[in-house]
Image (cartoon, rainbow, N blue to C red):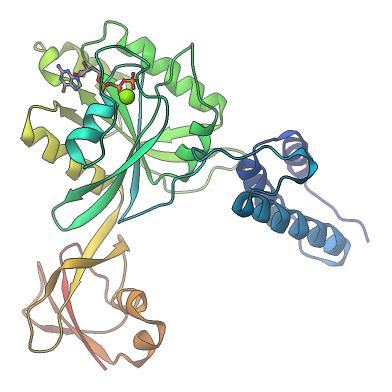
Amino acid sequence: MPANLPPQYYELEREFKAERDPREKLRLAEELLAMMPKHKGTDKLQADMKAKISKLKKQIEGGDKSHGARQLTAHDHIEKEGAGQAILIGPPNCGKSSLLETLTHAKPVVADYPYSTREPLAGMMTYETVQIQLIDTPHVSPESYENYLSGLIRNADVVVLVADLEARTMVEDLRFLVDKLEERRILLKPEVTRRPDDPRFAYKKAFICAHKEYEDEDGYKRAALKEMFPDFALVATSIIDDDSMEAFKKTVFDALNIIRVYTKPVGHDPDYKDPIILPIGGTVEEAAMTLHKDFAQKMKYAKIWGEGKFEGQRVQKDFVLTDGDILEFHV
Ligand SMILES: Nc1nc2c(ncn2[C@@H]2O[C@H](COP(=O)(O)OP(=O)(O)OP(=O)(O)O)[C@@H](O)[C@H]2O)c(=O)[nH]1
Ligand SMILES: [Mg+2]
């Protein structure tokens, strides 16, 4: 029986064969498997691809050195922590490390000369009741692009494009950066509502951080940014302006498209320290699932407190939650 593979499959297969980075190779292998029509004619192909996937996974996890596989550096991947992962990307000297230093407990190198950051570094940023992971990265410029950046960006939940309002070449620097990512098949989007038609590409949610805002007294640079990125969220920041740092955190939180839901035991106060994190549109049942699968099954109803609700209103499993809701589960 013929396999009847779509033409796009062969194109992607060529990429897969040429790709050297194991993580990117794994991603392409998974795309190839998903693309295969599932019938008798592709049984063998499917089995082969599954074997390749499992081998690549082993290689990534265990550092399999057979077949001259490239040794993975620690920079290829940063394990996600907290409610979401935001990655700071920008030209040299724009202030990425200063943002990480100001907003987290991490201790990056901050310097008044460019090229000071050589390796990615992660820190945890507290926004109200949630922890969000922030990653500082080496700059992107015509002189330098660390290959592992593509993997880090693809893996992140949100891209923070840091613009240096002090730089004369701000617009050109950002244009270069956006084009560079596009060349690496990463397209920055103000909102991501669907997967790209071409599976080799990734759409990444991004917003603009107009940094060193006091260096732009007449607002000329901010206007240029709005023109360049018309639909993107934009936040103006300075590390010496606490309000702007708070606004930055809120912009990251909003960009993650998540909500916080608090739980309370019957007869007790809510626990505000450890909220359940759900995507926007999350339901009572999904909140219960994060606690325990069985618990979600046993649950009969919940009582809810929150904006636009009656105090302690009874709700069913399919009730859609909003940020800040408090739930009391009843089994
Ligand atoms: N005026 C002003 N200067 C800032 C601000 N944030 C950072 N800087 C300065 O900008 C310079 C570069 O800061 P870094 O945080 O090292 O920049 P970076 O983007 O990490 O630089 P590379 O890692 O070399 O790409 C330093 O001299 C900082 O003091 C700010 O909000 N306002
Ligand atoms: Mg830096």
